[in-house]
Amino acid sequence: MQAEEQKGRVALVTGASYGLGRAITEELLSRGASVMLTDISPRVAETTAELAAQGHAVDHCPIDVTDRASIKKAVEATTARFGTLNIFVNNAGWSQKMNFIRDITAEEWDVYMNINVRGNLFCIQEAAETWIAAGTGGRFISIASTAAVKPYKMATAYCTSKSAIPMLVKNAALELGEHGITVNCVAPGPTTTETNLAHSSGKFNADHGEAKRRREAMIPLGKNDPVDIATAVAYFASPAARKVTGQMLVVEGGGQLIS
Image (cartoon, rainbow, N blue to C red):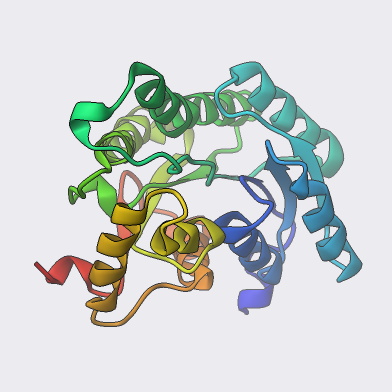
């Protein structure tokens, strides 16, 4: 049964305070996993307390995915608390500064690359070190975006950083498969999270928000809810995906079918 699917298994989820990270956490918990919630945001403590009050096996610790030592500490905290680590979901990402390509600053570019690209590399490295040392294998899942395969105006830095994730996943899958480690990613289209809704409202950039609302209105099946992404992540973590690696699953309601 699905509720028993992950019984006895342990997951670490980054960016777990809210939005996709919280939805992913809740989905894995519903399938029987214990989860270490990690985030750079202090909101992670409140989210963890809410889930613990519901009777779930959870704990939390801080993480900064741009700092490999921080990731190592989070992994160590997970194994110390729950005894093992089986699933690592790197949901942490950055998308809050939109700019035309001619106006992108070096500082803006570096933030995108550090969080969305280097962060994934460091997380894969630390997860792999732990799993190889333990000889257990493991499941690593990253969160990419439809921006990995489709350009959007005012989103050059975001699109470029997200497009690196599928190839990073493929290379990691190639090198780590012999250790029983699978590496995959989910690419969400527009999803009703706090950050997405802020973009659509024009909070970060009015022009970008208007264009985003027009695109989203044409999605054949409409915008995703966070659970749509969470169930895709859960698939990669499930027994059904034991032979699936180096793949990107796009979940976007048919949005790429429109011009």
